[in-house]
Length: 205
Image (cartoon, rainbow, N blue to C red; front, side):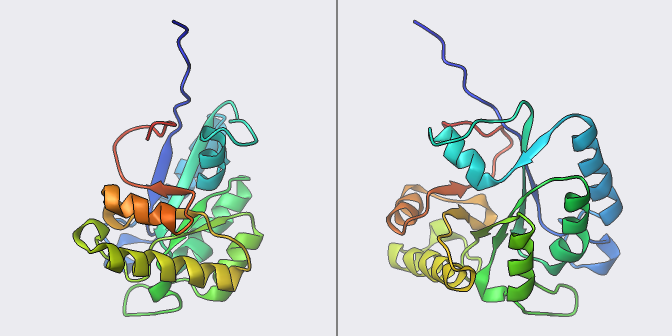
């Protein structure tokens, strides 16, 4: 039997890039720390690819992995991706994927402003992939199939309408998805879905 080499690709998941004192999120990474991390990846010879590019390569589509690939993802769609993370990514020649919670686009509260449609479009023009992260950010595996269909369908349709092209990518809120959730995503036309796990991404994930 011939052993088949399965590529193993690190995926780094971020939420906010902000000073922890300026946000209510416990998942924030400070701009300085983020800058150090991106600089390290560049110095170590990593090449950033989008989540969609990785999905296409692992599923047997066109393209091939760079020698040291890495995927950088950002969940929820906070404005500080645009003001803090994106300039640092561009400076180092890195791309990324932002999974946007469409029901929160353009909203603001005392601590967290979310990306607006213009910022999302500008980010995409800079080479960033935009993916869906549902409409209201619920835990999908606790919902009915119809509720899941509405969450995933509304989110996908809103992004496609505003961006003017198909949006194939999805990140499951909280990283949770069961067989029913995954099947609904497939039925709605999503080409790939990201969950959460302390492991490297492979074609079997």
